[in-house]
Length: 352
Image (cartoon, rainbow, N blue to C red):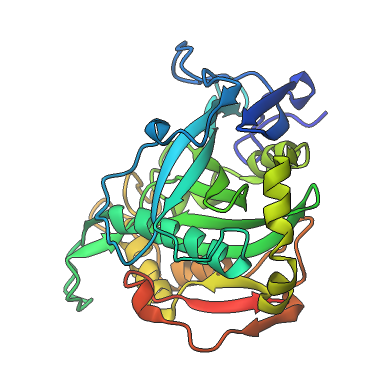
């Protein structure tokens, strides 16, 4: 048996998982997960959501106080499941190496255009992207001034996303998967989304936070604490999912079968401008809570431009997950309206 380490921290035993079941107004979500284990608190605030939730009750939803624009759809959310698990290396030597948070939300979308549905691939993928774009637009910070870099921007992004956007077939239903790469502090976000009726979609949000001495930023942690054990744990949960739509929602979904074949499966990519800015942002933060012992205390402890560029270039490349549709079948979609997404101006592709 391999001993845990920083490179391969150990999480909870998945063999101790229990069946989790949520009734969402007739749509049944089932999956397996071990009991929560908060590494910092004995609080029992996790896994307190009810097993039956009326997702058609508008009063249960919250929003993030984003500016509402009547020209675009607006999302609100309600929590249906939450848990956290700690991951550790060897006791005393490594100790705490990070934690994994899982949040399951139902997203309610208001103001969808007339005669559109989240069961349409184009509508759904656009909405998932818009919600990510809104999140990233709220997560900005003041730029770090550097005489060697000329920038008119007053705010820098905390994340680079979407990354690794792809469509998966999970339990005979299409899901969108994407990642959000942190640029300042380590908080890697992985999201799995699927529509459950015309105006609601399910979002499984995983957040990986890793920790090690003298590696207090998003770049340095990559060389210290491996993420494979976290990702393997997530895959165990995803592979256990069973989602049964309510009968009336199954009927609605069937209406869009032909149009979805024609539309394909849209994919959103980061723009070149996003990618180049993210390299600079990550490098500027690469000396945060980090001291390079090989240099004098007066030396610049930031990573080289080449190191950071290499890392980002690898991150923006696609890595297919299990049950992913093949990327070889992508085609560029014409006439994409970039004005819809002022923050990212993404590129778009499509899997047929």
